[in-house]
Length: 403
Image 1 (cartoon, one colour):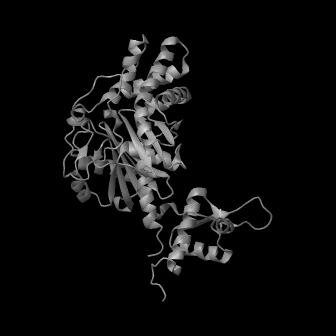
Image 2 (tube, helix red, strand yellow; image 1 turned 90 degrees about the vertical axis):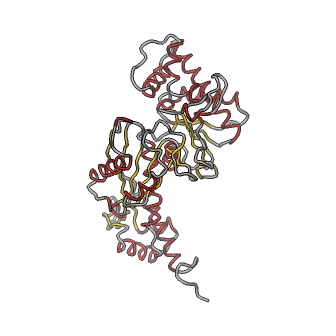
Image 3 (cartoon, helix red, strand yellow; image 1 turned 60 degrees about the horizontal axis):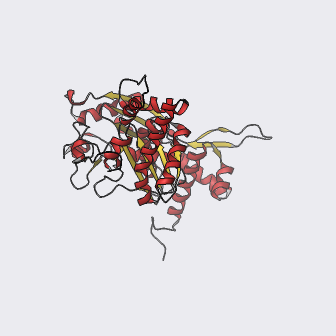
């Protein structure tokens, strides 16, 4: 009996699978010729030609020029049509919302930053989100209706059982149990939300130091200390979305912090969070400690310690590495990951000197010995992760030629 349209193995489904394979190759490699696409997909020249004609007619690929530098006429080159779809991402902190729009190839085409001065603002969160998104859409020369999907990254996580944001009491205005419904009513496109550190892990898995790895931990240290857990290639979020909230972890070296959600802090945050670095520097007699936000001060001090050979700075880097490894030892002992990615400015500013010290300390504190690497995605990694997440779903929808 012949299968119906959409049944696995039918010509329509097989064509759609070949179409998607070709589009993914064009995303990965950029411009490709028909012959090259045929070789990479294993398709014959006639089938590859039919495929490209079909995708060009659907507005998914463009003929962009010809090969040069070889004898004879040049071969026609093709690329994904960047205007085939757009996605947006938001990176939300207590001080600002950073929004961006990317075309379907992943290129950022518009960006906007909206300051959000905490409890002093009278603008509702839904309006802040809309204003930030509209700013990025306008910068891209687009309209709201052009955006296929939006992903919003915030500290903490929305509890799936209550709809309320947890683990982020420092984010004013975001804790209403009806907020997600209000956003859905106000935004014309589908949207998703995700923990900010999870999005950094996604960016590293797609574009950075965790490419090719299916089991890894990402430790983030910037304004706050947190982790993302990727197990079997998938983010592990936990029952309430709180997996990876390691800042609350009790650790040796600090007094127990009780009622951690009210304090919005815990033992590991107090021991190794970015606010601990300036305090440690003062205790070691280091002068010229930068004023301003503790994350910026910590990044400056750690970078200077990684480059300076005097005794106080060596002790700062070594002590900080021991503190970081103390909390990581618990994660590694439970999860036994293949890889640990160090991310956030309070970690990446230490570069290889800090990474090597944390690796050495961790090997003495934990039985398993994962490899430590410094994250590669440095420019707005939360926003990049939000865009990558939104683009993945957008591509699935736009590139589906089986419909």
